[in-house]
Image (cartoon, rainbow, N blue to C red):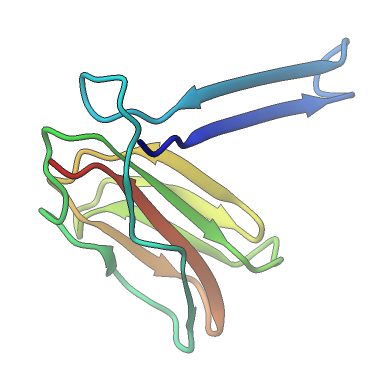
Length: 134
């Protein structure tokens, strides 16, 4: 059985009047079970030579909406002004912007695709889906 554990640590010495330190850990299971997610697309890394508009990186319907999946996406660049916009499909639903070094890790139900748009040329993105098989 595959076991994948995600850990997120947030810390700051100056965000508030006291130091902040929060850690959350989650084992990624198949939907409704205690069996670990057992598949991955592998880590894909792409450099976009031209600015992108609504470019699909994860296809709609590629994953069953009754199963468990997680998506990892990272803007590998270091720019503080250039970003990838992450959209739910080609719709106007924007999940957020990833500036240089930013990343996201979200649950994914698979019915809608995930598209990106970028602000300039030669931007680098990496992404992966961790999911279950039947």
